[in-house]
Structure formats: structure tokens, C-alpha cells
Length: 108
Length: 108
DNA sequence: ATTTATTATTCCATACAAGGAATATTCAGA
DNA sequence: TCTGAATATTCCTTGTATGGAATAATAAAT
Image (tube, rainbow over the protein chains, first blue to last red):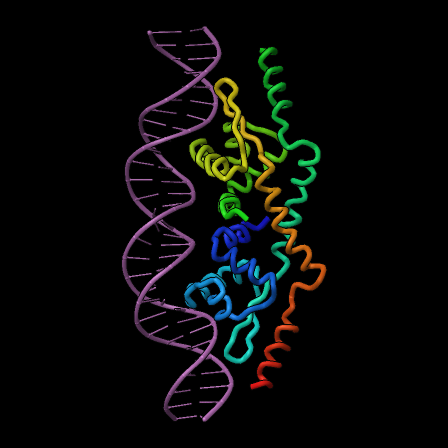
């Protein structure tokens, strides 16, 4: 799992941007307006998201249109697979482990 | 979606710890040894993970046993739901959006 | 009570992220 | 070619995260 994805999403404004782009592509100005952000910081956040591969840009005249790229989120989804299997089984294998420890102890 | 979850996972050592705990609970020393980390930094990382609710601790004599808590990852899983719907549909609604822009343009 | 093992905490130094403000860049249109 | 709109970049400052080293705290054992 790529840590860059988590880094990019570990900032509330950027998470808001991603959630916003879920409804479709938007220009920088539209994003800034809807989230009440300054344009420069919006551009900066978009660059981070872009570096993480979470968004892509297309230029239309003056505007730059950003939209989501599914790949990183699909990778995240795939990563979660391992954990889903455990949820069904039993994530807190604590009791088992404590028994092992107890066993070790009685073996000493 | 809670940003703390992303922050906690946005560090490779911590991500390694989480992946390691997938195989079952471990003590601090075991984690440090398996990941070749110093004990103090291991404790620090575990504290971050604990604050994010990703792990829980149980004390057994000297040792502190850490294991995963499923809730934050389940929340992450739920958050991804919105995106899965889009993947099937078509995440890059870029063409549509460009047509809209084109339409606006011809209306000017 | 003292020692030993295990874990947590503190202090320090460094690196990195983020916002504000200003400026640069790019492109379309007059 | 000049202007204006949209976006990116830079500079600066501040806050925060991280690792290393040392130390503290806790519990078991002798």
C-alpha cells in the first residue's frame, strides 16, 4: 500500500476536495469557491493530490479541470481486503494470544 | 471520514505495524524486533495509532499487548463505498464536463 | 529491597507541511 | 499588442512530526 495516498488524504481540505470531485470534474476556481478556500492554497492542495495520483488535470482554455483518478482508491480498497477477511473471522485474537502467553508462563 | 485515520496510516513504519498486527496481537518488543525499530519510536508510533483508535492495549505483567481495532478501518471501508459506485459507472466524467463547457461557450 | 526486563516519556535538533501575501504565468479576447 | 481572467509558484513564517539519546516508570523475580 502506497503511503502517499494516506498522506494526501490526511488533510481535511484535501479530503474535502476529493469528496467534492466525487460529483464530477471541477475547475480550480469552482473548487476554491465551493470550499471557501483561497485560490493559491487550492492549487497547492491539488498539486499534492496530483502527485499522489488521486486527481488528473485537463486544460480547457484558461481553466484547468481536475477530476478523480480511481486507481489509488482502488488500491486502498484492495488493501482493505486483508482486513475484511479478519473482521469476519475475529480481529481481536487477543484471547488466543493471552492463552499462549499463559501457556508459556506455565511452561517456565 | 475521520482524517486522523489517514494521518496515522500516512507513515510507513506505522503502516507496517498495522500490517504486522494483522497476523495477531504482539507486544511492543516483538513489534520493534520484527520491524527493526528502536523501542522508544515503536512506543511513540503505537501511541499515535492508539490515539487514532487503530489499536488497543492490554497489559500482561510487564508486557503491553497491542492488537488491531477494526472500527476505523471499517469506517474507511464505508467511505470507499461512495467511490465504488462511481467506478462502476464511470469515474472520469470528464467528457461530459467538457461538453458542458463547450455548451456554455456556444451560449456566450 | 535490589535487580532486571519491558515499556513509556522527555528533551533536543531537524525536517517538513501549511497558510498568507505577493508575484509570475498562461491564455483568450478586444 | 494590451488587458483581464484563471491558475501556478515563490517567499516567508509558524506549527508540527520524527528520530536519537537519555531517562523515567512499572512490574516481576531473586
